Amino acid sequence: MLNRLENEVMSAVFSLCDGTDGCLVSPLDILSILPAKHRYDIEKLDEILNALKCDGYFDLIASERKGEKMYVINLKESGFAFKRQARQRQRDIGFKILLAFIGAFATFIFGLILKGIFGS
Image: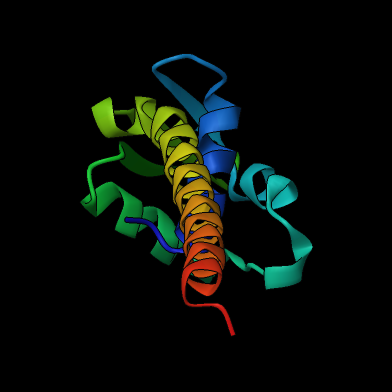
């Protein structure tokens, strides 16, 4: 399971690849999509991209073009399934919240029944 920073970077990479198998992007392209509140820098981005590469989300090749660092990213199966897994996680959380409400409601009703039977 990805942490918040890895999730944000993977989401940015997924959107930059735009439904294709891979893409050629610069670190500045990725940084421009990421939220500013975490204050990403290129070194932090490199660490996160390498962690995602090790987790099997994509193949990563760092190269240079006209003196600017570039990444060649080719998505793997886990990378393609990233958005589907995110939607599934949201559904699971929603289901757990619904179950909690149902449990609380059932407990309330059960309490009322017991109070009616044993009345005070």
